[in-house]
Length: 101
Image (cartoon, rainbow, N blue to C red; front, side, top):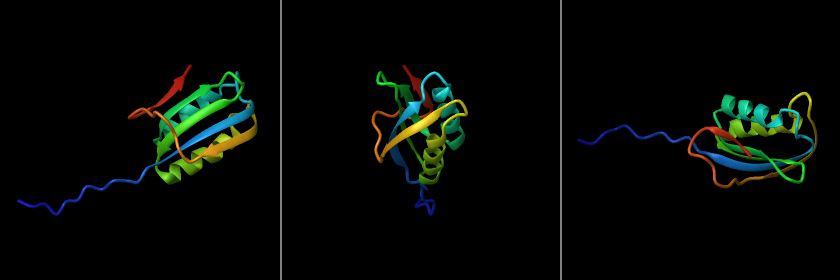
């Protein structure tokens, strides 16, 4: 029997952001994960050896836009001085947001 029900799929976008400044040792990764989870995003965050923080995230466009704006500010103790964003991400988990080491 044919069904009139059509699966509704929310379009998903992805991004990569690299942040510089005082972004390591200030709780940036934990803060980032909390923000991403609140927005329903999936992805990961890690400290880079060069002192910057790298974020890969995917989800609804509106949620990504709010998340990107929040990353430019960072947590209270951080001082974000550099933001480089690309509209693609790599190797994202199927769900959840991870802190990678």
